[in-house]
Every structure is written in C-alpha cells, then in structure tokens.
Amino acid sequence: MKKLRQPIRQDRLKELARSNPEPVVQELLWEILRLQWMLDQDRQDIELIRQAWTEEVGGSLVAIHVMRSRLIGETGK
Image (cartoon, rainbow, N blue to C red):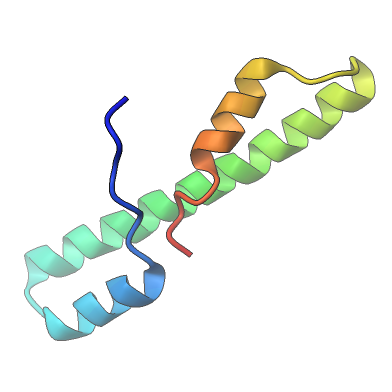
C-alpha cells in the first residue's frame, strides 16, 4: 500500500477554518472533521469487539488487529 501523509491535526483544521472563510473550504473542513469523528467511533467499536472476542472466544482475531492498527492515529487528534 502507498505510504500516506500523516493526518491533519484538529488544531490545524481549526486554524485553516479561521483563515479561509470561503464556504467551500468551510464545507470541506467540516467533512474532514466529521470523517475523523467517525473513524474515532469505529476505533472505539473495534476495541469493544476485540475485548468481547478475547473474553468469549480467547486469543485474538487477526482482522480486528489489522483494522485497529490501521485506525490508530487516523483521527488527527
């Protein structure tokens, strides 16, 4: 997979919003924040699934580990 740039941190997004009042820029920044929030929610859900899997089945599920690893750090916090 192609190496991607680091996520833009939320404080940088807020700075961009303050310095770029154009409606289209504001809309795109809002969408980025919304998607970051959704990724964070997905990361939390995956952690709950991982914990339940460990308690009920034992061990770890590779797919959950891969998804969790991919989502860590993607929220730009």
